[in-house]
Structures are given as structure tokens and as C-alpha cells.
Length: 493
Ligand code: ARG
Image (cartoon, rainbow, N blue to C red; front, side):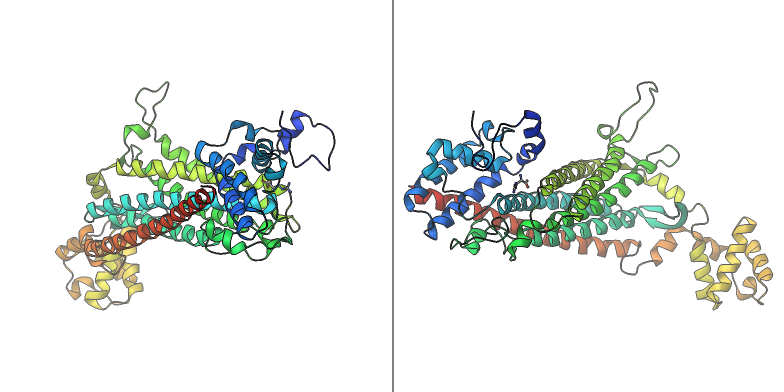
């Protein structure tokens, strides 16, 4: 049975399986194990470059690490008797190479800077994947908007018919929100991709290490400079979880709408059967379960965020073992969000919107009353508040006919006679048509088809720019990794 090389000197006695299981971070460490090998390789290359280790030692360490990189890390490295994967891998190396070589890998560093580095490496990769999935959701929304630039639907405030709008306008509202979510993740990436390596336990080290060198080998954009901060902070993870929480609220709101829209009394959308379930007792049922689970996953992501927040709030400087408990929250939040985003792409793309039904509802609930009031203002120079008052009274009376409107105008009693000013039933009918009202709302960002076309063109440009940004970051990371591995291979060749 392999011993945990970290415990050997200071501590005595065997620990119970229960104790080891309780203290070990192994389950979550599966997520960072591949990153750990890269960190080990970069660190060994640095020790060699700085002549902290002899070339002979490097030539023993690197092949063993490259083997783990090429063939994968054996299961034994993940055994609970090691506190974590860092101890597991080091123990394996010492056993394979002997302590004279294997025991020289961990010089000038600590698991404290090591684990923080691994988390950042894994997290930045995940962030880019998350951003790519989010981009796809936005692409679907923009494509649907292009298709539905003229599809008239009711717009709501307080979930009451408010004013007519277009389906494109509604969908572009979500795209805009997701675009900000994208920007937030991009901004968080900049703070995630900083290297804590070289901080060691917290006070750095007396060896002549080269932090910039390991940072560049590992594709980081800079250093977390203060070494105490480097091991103590998890604010980069909190920030990501906050951003994911906000992103999930946007997903959840969209799901809520899809759920309402797919009810038989609204019927604006039919979700593809693949995203729905039926009932074990009611044979007619088609339930929007995927959207419901997504709405609920939002709560799970909030849970991960608050779990992480609460873990750090009382911690003194610098590293405390509590931080180990924070890490699984990161992966849980990332996983729930990733699954939701992936399914959302197809759920949206395969949904069928009933534009007939939407059109039918668009004029309900006096939804064009605002435009009628505005038209009275424009045509007859009546103060807006007076026009609002007249139309409101007419609605209370039950219709917007010329007769009722005139009656309302007399009651308002500001000497306004609409018929006297030349208002006709024909003019009223024209103004009350949802299409008329929408066409007028062509200011930037408005629902008019012409404004939608401009918005779609602008959003497409933004999508291209965001896609290029992801590609550029992916390419930089891929190149750093390739360079790191080939540098290691050259050194042992
Ligand atoms: N498993 C630990 C974690 O996830 C790694 C650092 C352990 N450091 C220590 N001083 N025990 O945080």
C-alpha cells in the first residue's frame, strides 16, 4: 500500500478510512488532475532552468510526468489515503523514481499555490466552453429574430397585455441579456487567468524561482502578484459563480416564458416532444419538463454560489483547509450551467412558434390604447395627460368607438371635442391596428420590423466578434500547452 509522502515525517499513526475519506478532496480533484500534470511539468522545467534542480533530476522527473500526461493518471493516485491528487501523484513518482529524483519535484512550492493554479487552469478552459455554448444560444435567438421580424405578438407588463410588439423584439431582449452574460464571463476570464504559482505556502520561497516563466509556460496572462493573496483568494471563483447565477436567472426567465407560452390557454409555442414528458396517469399530458428542470437548476447554481461565498467569509489569511470545500461548488455550478445551456440551444431551435395565435392576441386588452392617445396628441395638439385620461375613460366604458371617445372627452371637460377636431371612426380603426402601432416604433431597439432588421445586423456583427474572441483565447491556450509539452519532450530526448 502506497504511503502518503506528505504525512511521513510529522505525523504518526494510521487513520481510519472514514477519517481519510472525510479529509480527502479526491472526488473533486478528478476535475483538476490533468491540470496538475501540466503544473508539475512547468514547475520542473522552471526548477531546471533556474538550476535549482540538476539536469539529471529533470531527466528523470519529466519522462514520468510525460507518461502520466500521455497515458493518463492511474487510479491509485486517486486513493482516499492521499489527502489530495497532488500528494497522490507525488507519492507515485517517488515510488517509481526513488526519493532522490521523485523527492525533488515539490521544491519551492506548496500544494497551496499548486491547487490554486490547477483550479484556475481548469476553470479558464471551462469558461471558454461556457462562452461558446452561450454564443450558440445567442445565435439561435438572432436567427429566430431574423425569421420573425414581422411576427406580431402582444407585449406584456405585469403579465397583462400592454402594447403590441414583435416576436423578434421579445427574443432579441433575451439575446441582449445573454450578451451581457457573455461579457461578464469574458471579464471574469481576465481575472481567472493569472498565475498564483510560486507563492508556495504563502510566503513564496527562498529558492531563486522564476514565476513569470511558469506563468507563461502555462498560458497565463499574468501573475497574482502578492503571494499571500495568491493562495488565499478564491474571489475569481466567486465572481464566476456570481456570473453563472445571473446567467441562470436569464435562462430561468426564458424557461418560465416558454412554460407559460406552451400552456393550452396561451398556446404561443409548441416545444419539441423531445423536451417534454407525459403523465403516468393522464394520457393527454405534454409537460415542458426540460424548461422546468432548467428553472430549478438555477436554484442549484445559486446554492453553489452561496456555498462558496459562505465558505470564505470568515477565513483569516492565508490558506485554510476550508478552501478545499469551496472547490466542488465551482464544478457543480459550471456543470449545471453547461448542461442547461447545451439543452437550451436545441430546445429553442426546435420550438414552433404559433404566429397566428400571437397575432390574434396582439390586439387584445386594448393593447393599442397608448398609440390612440399618442395619435390624439400628435393630430390635435391635446396635452398627453388629457388624451390619456380620455382614452382611459373610454376603456372603462368598454370600447374605443368614436361615440364613446367623444363622450369621454366631454366628461374630462377640458373643452375638447374630438369630433369637432375632425376625428373619424376610420382614423381610430387605423390607429388601433397593432401593425400601425408597431411600425411607428422604429427608434433604435424598438419592435418595428425596420428597427429589428437593423438590430439583427448589429447583433450578427457582435456574434462574429465574440466568436473571434473565443477562438483567439483557445488558440493561445492550445499553443501554450503544445509548447510546454514539446519543450519537455525536447529536454528528455
Ligand atoms: N486538497 C487541498 C485543497 O483542495 C490542496 C491544498 C492542501 N494544502 C494544505 N495545506 N493541506 O485545497
